[in-house]
Image (tube, rainbow over the protein chains, first blue to last red):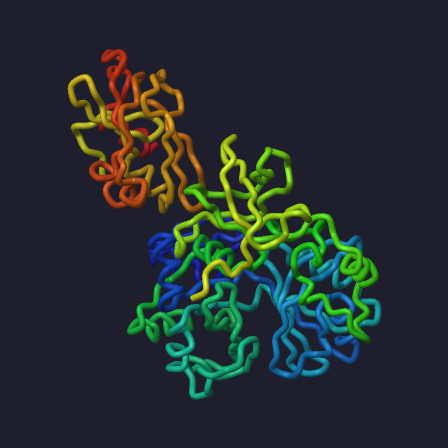
Length: 362
Length: 126
C-alpha cells in the first residue's frame, strides 16, 4: 500500500487508517459527524496527497487539454482553475478533474487517485502532437483546508493576500516559510477554503504549521469519511459512484462544464450535443428522505406503485440536516423538484422528495 | 476497551444484562468504535417472539449498515425510545443510556451459551 508524506502524523494523531485507491489513508480521527460539523462551522484540514497531478506543457499543451476536456480551456486565464471531465470516446467519463492554467502553454491537471494510471494512459494516447507531459503524482503533497474560517487562519502563514482571493483561482506563494506552494481557492466540501500543493519534503512542516495557525479557530484533522459526507451534502459528484465510464456528463448534470462553444472540439462533443438536444433517459438528481432512513449506494428507487425508476449512486445521513440524502439516476418523469419517489430500504419503500442540491447551504 | 464484568456477551459484539426473566441488549464498546458514528437504529419487531440468532433490527452508522441479532430467544418488549432522536447515545454510553432493546426470554438456559467478559475480551483481542 502507498503512503502519503503525512502517514506517520496520521498514526500519531489517532487516525483510523484504511485502504483507499491504493493508499493508506485516515477515514476518521475523532468521528465523522464531529469532523463534518467542524468543517461546516469552523475549519478542518484534510490530507489529499493521494490525488494525482499531471503537468501538460509546451506549444501543443493547449490543444491537447482542450481536446481531452469538456470544459472550454480557452476561457481560462493565468491563475484560474476550472472543473472539467475527460470524455472516454464512448460517451462516458474517464475521470473528473481540475485544470490549472499557469501560462498559456503550461497546465496542471489534478485527477482522482483511483484513476491516475487510467487517466495518464488516456491522455498520452490522445497526445499525438507531442505536448510535454509529466506525471508528478508521487512528488506532490496536497492539503485541503476547508471551512468558513479557513482562509482567515491560513492568512497567518503568508504575506501574500489570500483571504479575498476569488473562488477557483490560485497563486504560487511562499507559505509557512516555504517557497513554491500552490495556493488554490478550491475544495470539495461546499464550505469554502483552499487546497494547497507542495513538495513531499515540505508536507510535514506545512501540515504542522496549518494545525498551529488554525488552533485558535478550532481546527481539527478530517478524514475521508467526512470528506464524503461533506461533498454529498454539497451535491458534488464522486467518480466511481455518481459518474463513471458509462455515464455522460449531460446525464450527470455536468452540462455546465460541457461547453459547446466554437473552438472547443473535445472528444465525444457531437454525441453530447445530440444528448443535450434530444434529451437523455435518466439524469442524476438529488433527493431528501421524508422519513428516518439512510439511503445507500445501489438501493433501488421506485414509484408509488413499486415500479423501478432508478438507482441510488450516493447516499448518507446528512450530519447537518439529520435526514437521509442522496443522488440517483432517475427516469425523466421524476426530474421535477418536489417529485415523490420511494427508496427501497431493506424491502420497504421509504418516501423521498427530489431536491436540487446543495442539500445544505452553510 | 471497556468490557464490564457483570454482563454476558455474544460473538456478534452484543452485551446482555440479566434482569430476572428479562434481558437488556446493547452493542459493546468495541462494536460502537468499529461502526463509528451511529445515525439510525431501526427495530420493527416489538412484540414479536424471535429465536436466538434471528435479526431483530438494524443499526446504521455513517459508513455501514449491520443487522442486530437476538442473543437469546424471546419476545421483544421494548426499544430504547431515546435512540430515535439520539442514536449517538450508543457511541457515548454503549452499556448505559445506549441500550437497544428489552427482551422477555423464552428459555433462561440459553444464557449459558453466552460469553463472559473474559471470553469476550480474548475474542476481540484475537
